[in-house]
Amino acid sequence: MAGLIEDYALIGDLETAALVGRDGSVDWLCLPRFDSPSCFAALLGSDAHGGWRISPAGGGPCTERRYRGDTLVLESDWHTPTGSVRVTDFMPRRHRAPQLVRIVEGLTGEVAVRGELRLRFNNGRVAPWVRRTGHHRVAVAGPDSAWLRVPPGVHTFGEDGTTVSEFTVHAGQRVPFTLTWQPSHVTAAPRADAERVLTGTLEYWRHWAAACRYQGEWQAQVLRSLITLKALTYGPTGGIVAAPTTSLPEVIGGERNWDYRFCWLRDSSLTLSALLRGGFREEAAAWHTWLLRAIAGDPGDLQTVYGVAGERGLPETTAPWLPGYQGSSPVRLGNAAMHQLQLDIYGEVVDTLQLALAAGLPMERKVWRLLLALMDFLEKHWREPDEGLWEIRGERRHFVHSKVMAWAAADRALKMAEATGLPAPVERWRTMRADVRADVLAHGYDSGRGVFVQHYGGRELDAATLFVVKTGFLPPDDARVIRTVDAVRTVLDHGGFVRRYQATGTDRRPGADGLHGTEGAFLACSFWLADALAMTGRPAEARDLFGRVVALGNDLGLLSEEYDPVARRQLGNTPQAFTHVALVNTAFALADS
Image (tube, rainbow, N blue to C red; front, side, top):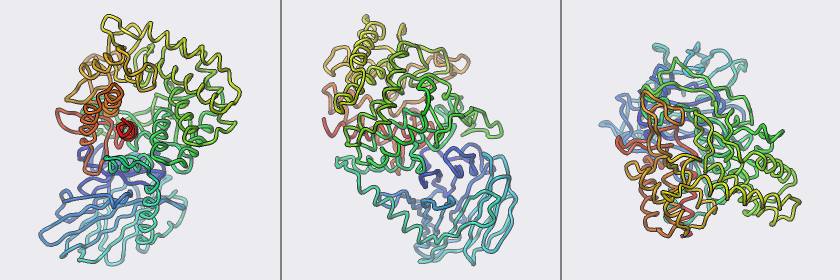
């Protein structure tokens, strides 16, 4: 059975990622890309759905674990009655084929170690045929093959569909295992010197992390978040996935389970903004290129979400053979949000382009043409209802957040036109900015209660209305802003943190969002509230809230999408880019307050 969501560590090679539990089991890995079918899916079922455990023969969780400095190399230590052992896990940046390397190191005494490799291709569905060739065990099924390289002297054998390795490690001894994936028609896997690629992986991450320019009191948390965001970047194209997992539930046993292994324009834009603030400009240039490729064509055909290489077709299906994380079904593959209209993404994209320009990236003509096309579409369609930031599966509505982000798009476009002097319909943009503002104030504000609401004609509150102050739509000393911040803080409170909105669904009846049940506190929204508190003159309260949210991270500083303050556990896909972006941006905001 899968561990708690917060039990998992992240390793990756900038093309895919694996989750490693405290018990030394790799329970999730998709190969060769983030959005490929998994070969380890125990996270969404049981050991029978694939995983790779290496630990002392007696099993149990590790005694302690850590990342080695500012890297993505994981070290897990077990202290046993006979000695201590360490497993170092990492994925080197690939030159040809993806590899997962695990080095078992004796620290003291001697420890009997057992490894159990259970490959299940096609999302836990297909057990491969396994054969021995030299020091390799080769697993083949359909288009997939995996090559396990075992060092000499390690007893390895097959047992009930599992490749088992048993050996004793002594103090000072290092025993490396390498798992390599490649298409099954390729007849030989590249060999890797585990120690050499470990050195190269450590050097890469240390060099990358050294560019971080945040120097505040939360430096460790900010840098770990930035490393995590970098790990969610698909290196070959610059696309950024929302999370490396699918279908980790927003409530245990519920249906709010989604596939996040794709590139949302919103999440990618916000991730890029955090990386830019952290001092990482190379990612901005790569994202610019990805964006131009992904959305080439008619702006009216703009999708909310794309594949890591810009693919448009991401049909949503289910995997009924997987029972889901702790029985939370369905397990979804693909995401139907690709068909939704989410007008806020135009604002997020334009805002990020403006941030990149302010950070010193030149405004290329092709990017400017893209901006003009996006603004032309938004100018014509901002008055329409949409599915909004939260991707509701009910009827379209006029969401206040979507309108505010349309305002932000016009505002940032005007700023870029002024900064660059490039040709633009500035008078039309000024008119649009004024019109959107007037529309929101007329229809998105409940004058009786003195607060902004989730959507026109509604009374429900939504944490996304905090963007009224975060974007500069209204000044922070405006009474309407202060009342909205206080209302979000009170009405959407969930154990001291913040829900996204007032979910009205029950187990038997779907709510206005088209879904049954409720969910946990949304961690990014809690960071947004900290931003709003700081902006409205309450920095001490903002810092207190920020510190409490950061403390929800696991022992490695990783955060998922949501948190259940009753059960005191993380919920949703993990690690979540949206959450770590908010952490970084709030840390910078508090440093300036």
